[in-house]
Figure (spheres, rainbow, N blue to C red):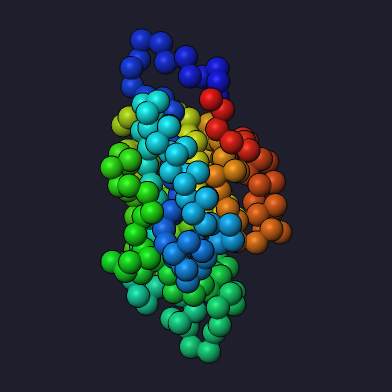
Length: 219
Ligand SMILES: [Zn+2]
């Protein structure tokens, strides 16, 4: 990224954008979340907050995604009779992991853990009861969010992406960003995964799709 910081030329519009994925109570041990990802303690949150603030101070537009589900969402095991958490079922031809209920709209642990003032926009996802949405760009039914048009409007061409969780929503958001033509860097040190094996696979898959995996943000 170092080389591209100076390549804006006459164009004063920011070229690099930032997406902070699903920094919400339910995904953290800090807030005793229902789907807490390991290693999401105060130290992690402080690190993400500091990095996000620094990127904002560089003038980059920073976006957040927010998992925002109705209480009877298709991804909750409680919405399927006889199913347990982490069972995998078929939903409209796609594999769906059944999660404990999480990030239910307007609940305390659905709130973002970073100051909303940091963000150009907060893009909510997973609002449709019928479809899950790991990606900040679109749900499993193919419905697009406002994220891509907003990035385009700001002239963003490169994206720095991090957050929760590496093996699900960070991965899906990064892959969709790459498919949409952005140059994508995922910051591994500012992301945490649900499980080590799926996280390792996710990092490989992202690399294969041309996503740069960086341990931290180059200064
Ligand atoms: Zn969810």
